[in-house]
Length: 554
Ligand SMILES: [Zn+2]
Image (cartoon, rainbow, N blue to C red; front, side, top):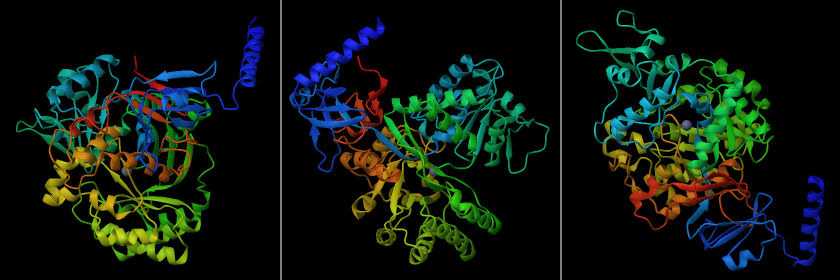
């Protein structure tokens, strides 16, 4: 019976296409929308047609409906705004997936009390003894009711049966009693190296652990995640990203990245479970001349572009010579000639192997030092085709942008101030208003795009990044950036421009014939709502390659 029906169906389809016009039949039509194509002219259309994962036509609803066949699915978006799938050009999602099932996210939460409620809810859903963690992505200053951290006592009250801990950027952990105990920290024990254990005037632990090693200590206690669970976490994370409108990202590795993180994505890919196009850069942390030699010796083994449009290695990420990595809230960088020499040797090896580079550089000293090294590298081996990229560029000056332009260096700008802005004022004072110099970068003509740097140092939703770029505000409402850009400029930077970092210019970033049907239907119009509402935009539907991966449309 089944095969008979199958034959009938095929025969009917063949008959239709013979009888019909010469035009191709679409798999899916999206009609009655305000389709913000983000093509070169930023044109707005009403409808689009999809076939075999790609957009085949964009136009008016009447035009596009001509591509309807008997099996075509028609999605009527009822006048809603549709934008290209958002691309995060710089994230650390692969590392974050590992403990996603234990995690609570406080992204965008402006109430201390609400934050407690979210952690309480997660603890109640967890088995006794299971960890509950907030692995960054929040700041004390985002809470408008009580801008502060958390005490051991209040964390004990909401999670009496579970170890509960919060990572605050890379400088502090807040923990309840069970978490402190699991980390081997008690009132009488000596402080672990590099960690300051806070105590009240009675000598009791407050629950705060200061110093970067506290983050490593916490992570080391979270336990192994079985391979199957790790793949499930990858699926859940990708789905959570789809709900935020993310359809692609470039991952930069970062401290704590393990081969198992990449393996979990590879397994998800090989079993066809991808719902976010996941591109990543190779990451290592050379810390000495010997490490540098060792890495150079293995450089030829880094082989980008062996994958496909769902999962691929794109280059080398984040940091070349680790001692020159700008710390989060550092005030200035003064790289030594010797360290820059090592940086340059690594850079030259990348250039010789034709490898794309994304390098973190916030501070003036680093930006200038790296540019000098890049100019020297370029004389020996041209880098102009490799799309080498600076991330952050907080303190870039016009002359830096000129040098970047001559070398064809791209820029990635991240929305760290959306939660770190207040802390940046503490370090840089009013200079913070121009960090990063977003307007200057937009006007420079340099290829540049917007990303988050999630998940430890920013929230993940691209709508926070877009909102920050347009309004200059941090979560909680404080003005932290003076150099804002228009909504159109911000959207281009978070879609079409970002395709370049993934070497996917021909496939992603705009809603145009030939490109993949990666798109997001929004609950309100990004282009016309009050700017303050941009952070509250909720995707109603997300499609990747023409497949609906998130649907909250009724
Ligand atoms: Zn990063």
